Image: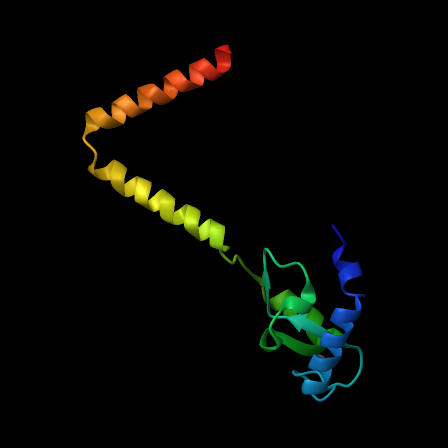
Length: 125
Ligand SMILES: [Zn+2]
Ligand SMILES: [Zn+2]
């Protein structure tokens, strides 16, 4: 995997960055400074490392000082987006839980015994 600092050098990010700077009038959105501008991510997606894949509304222009200040005062939220397969798995899990809830106890015990047997089999082969 590429390093984050390498990603920030990519053409796609530089273009996005330029767009954000232009949108914010090439000024820090906090103190209006025009120097040492950086583009800050308001939040990060845990599963999206590429900085240019973020919607424009979660990117803001900050100068070096305000950026440092922001990071000192705020903890950056890392959003965990549920992927489709994760959602499906969760649904399955919930369903299994629900079924378990309404199963008579003996059934659950029988199932558990089967599982144990299967495990023993796997180890003895
Ligand atoms: Zn500033
Ligand atoms: Zn930042």
